[in-house]
Image (cartoon, rainbow, N blue to C red):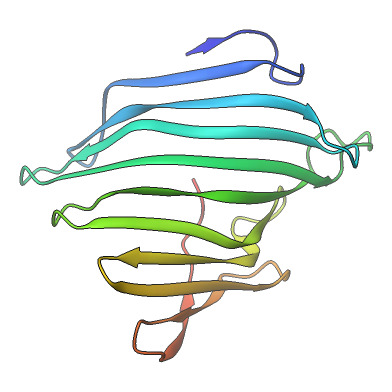
Length: 167
């Protein structure tokens, strides 16, 4: 890991490059960069988070690759003494890559995701996932901190699902 300055300083850049890293025998590679963009017109701090060269090599030899570019903008908690516990962030942007079956995919955040420090899950917002010519969406809800989301499949059917914790 390298860091140009403390991440709280506008312009600071933190870069993490995975070397010899694996989870459950899957080899994970890539570089994640977080850049403090300073304050926006509304006085909210923003960060840019990118993944370059993302790659997972599974134990069976199949490979998935991706790139990502997200903007995280603090929408609450910035002016309080609680340091992080009351922080809320909106996340915008997307990612793209090739899945382990060799199919191209894109993920686009179509409504900003709301991520609260005190909640394990995104609690609002929507993403679309396109693989080939099929598009599905996930609606994370109305802001309540719960695991529930609604997935809309390419055929238009909807299902309530439970989201796993962010790690």
